[in-house]
View 1 (cartoon, protein in one colour):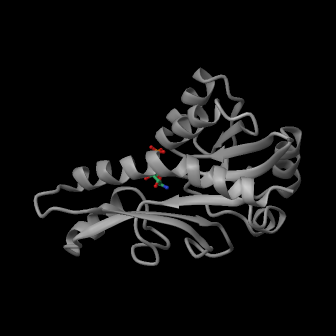
View 2 (cartoon, protein in one colour):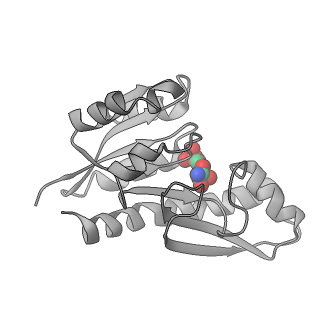
Length: 193
Ligand code: GRF
């Protein structure tokens, strides 16, 4: 069984990236081979380094450079891309090249609370301000439009009136950590060539 190499793209803390790397360390057919960030100081790069995973900072313009990025991914035999808090819109060439093989997680129940500008705390603030009784996560394939690709998985959590934005963020993060690795693994195992 050929090991499927995964690249994680992340811009921030990297708690999901770390969780995914650790989850796949015990899977012989799945390997996070590379972590790329568009922010040189992103904590996710430190986490990858500490976990012995190749990692790189690429400035925003490098993500637009098709030859550079595809060459870089090929050098690591990357077949799948996982976004874990990645703040740059995926360029069209990459969506085409990795059609059906780019997975993202959104910290809300799409199609609500999605689209441009809806990321991180902004999402949870909007959910709280709307007095929603529940929120959750959406794991979906990435296409040309923000947060519009095929939904693979959703999970919900109840919101109490007393919940702060921080409480909501923590509840959602628990769902992310519980479900993202298994949804990625299941999608890859169902669709690998
Ligand atoms: C998560 O909330 C995820 O849903 C969103 O970006 C955040 C990444 O958090 N896409 P972390 O850096 O993995 O802790």
